[in-house]
Amino acid sequence: MAEFEWRTATTLVPYPDAVAEMEQRVAAIESGAEPELLWRLEHPPLYTAGTSASVDELIDAKRFPVYATGRGGRYTYHGPGQRVVYVLSDLRERGRDLHAHIFRLEEWIIQVLREFGVNGERREGRVGIWVNNKGREEKIAAIGVRVRRWITYHGLALNVSPDLSHFSGIVPCGINEYGVTSLQALGINASLNEVDAAFRRQSSKIFSR
Image 1 (cartoon, one colour):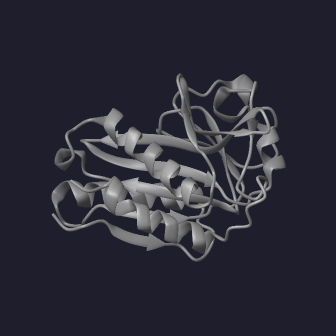
Image 2 (image 1 turned 45 degrees about the vertical axis):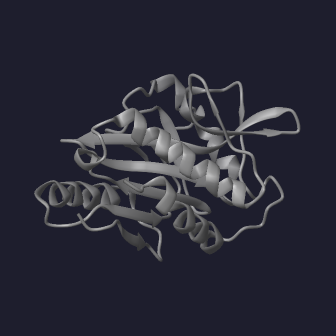
């Protein structure tokens, strides 16, 4: 099978358009017509509700558009300054193990953060990647995955330089005891291009078969 195709959107991608494109690509990967895809993009400000989302975790339903989505997880925010990477991967070729796929996404984020001097960590019972910011645990990246016939879609979102106040309209991922942060908030002024380059460098180690 061919290596992943890389794609980077140069304009904000509306969420419904992204979902439609992913669903088409999943079918093409399943049939063997197209290769796996790593799609880097940004969305306009919006909230998405995963399959475990609870309505009381949507604090301000009128602030931004809200989209129900079939990925796992609860409410998340997407917006400019956040690097979303949708990972359309064929698990028929990678062990048919969803937990291993999520572990790969976590490790990918951890290794990218390490390039910027940030220690990203997993937390038992909490999906995503976390950092210790002056004694306070804060989430810097979210993960949400859907699988159809062993083809994955959706993926990860790393906070590079988003407006963190936009997260206040939801309880991010159902967890209100902890904060949300970004590379910028940690004092790291990395561009999306620099972050993309790090994702590219680390990908061969993460997705090698």
